[in-house]
Image (cartoon, rainbow over all chains, first blue to last red):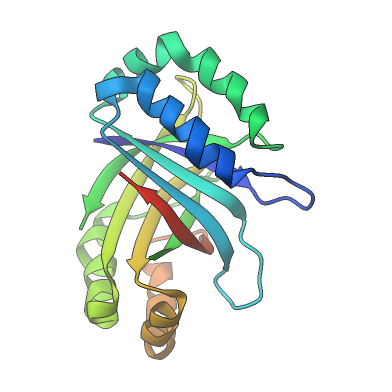
Length: 105
Length: 105
């Protein structure tokens, strides 16, 4: 099991439209990735470790796939469509990485 | 539901002992946080979005709690013990943030 992590920086002046993201972007992702997408978690940054500090990331999104291969196969034909929608909700490009899931409990 | 995200930077020369982390640190976390800890996900960075690129984070850990209050209450008495163990497995301090869970599917 692997995760595609998308981490949107919480820069001063950055904009993120959570309503659009949850009601339009994520449903589109689910539609175009189909059965290859095994799970989706969206989190909104509240703050740093200590009270009153700023979260490093405004939004974290974790998309679960069975393997790197199944992710690449699913994303290939729709990557452009997904990327083109980002400007509709975020002013900052996300940090994107693939991770191997070691523990879920 | 909230998450404590711990993101360990994947700097050149950084060290992370995944074996110690999974067999000693995470079990200790579960023990000292008790029933306040509602879930735990550990992921190991594989690479960036494009094949052959480097993951921004070596390890991502997501700890789930019912609320900021229940997290603070649980972590208060044991924060020092947890922090003191980090040097046993990681050469880099993690980015730490609290996030509000918007979607799990």
